[in-house]
Length: 258
Image (cartoon, rainbow, N blue to C red):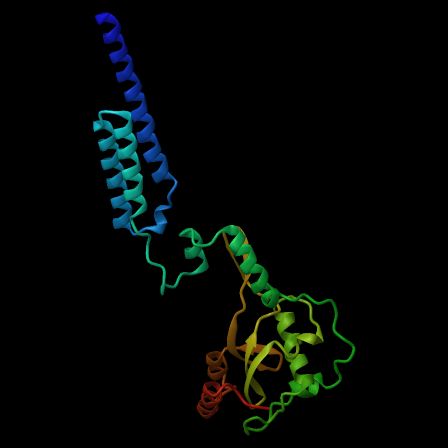
C-alpha cells in the first residue's frame, strides 16, 4: 500500500512538471504573437520582464490550479502594457507599414485611390486639332523685355507639353494640355516660367510590395524648346534679376490669374 501511494505521488509530480512546461510555453507563445514595433523599447522590455516573472511564478506553483492562475496573471499583465501612442503622430507609409499600423491590403486600397489621379498617362498620338504651323514662330519669338509678353495660349501649351514629352521619351496627347501646367508666372524675353506637374512620367515608390505613383511639381522655365531651372535660366542670361523679382511675386500669389 505504501508503495502504491509513493508511485501515485511520483506520477503526480511528473504530470505537474509537464503542466508547468506547457503553461510556460503558452506565455512564450503569447509574447511571440505580439509585434515589438507597436511598443516603445522600454515597454517591450517590460513585456519580456513580465513574461519571465510569469514563468517563474508558474515554476513555483504547487498545483495545477496555481499554475493556471500564475499563467493567466502573467498574460493579463503582459496585455496591460500600453502600445506606443500613435494619436497625433505622423508616419510615412513605409513607417506605418513597418509598425504594423497598415497591412498590405490597406496599402493596396490606398494605392488604388491615390494612383487613380497620379498614374502616368501614356497616350498614343498627337491630336490633329493641335495647330503646328505656328511652332517655329512661337519658339523664335524671343524679342522684347516686357513681362508676360507672350500669352500662354493653347498652342503654346501644346508646344511646351510636346517638348516635355519628347525630353522624357513619353507619348503625347492634347487632353493633358490643361492639367500639366499648375501655375504660370509670366514670359520674359521669350522665356516661359511655370510650374509643371510631371504627370507624363510619374516616378514610383514601392512599399510592402505595392507600387505608388508620385507626382513631382517644380517651377521651371521653357526657352526655345529646352527646359531650364530658374538658376540655369538666370546663369544663361535668359532671365535677369528684375524678372526673378517679378516671378517671386507671382509665385507667392499662386501665379498669374488668366
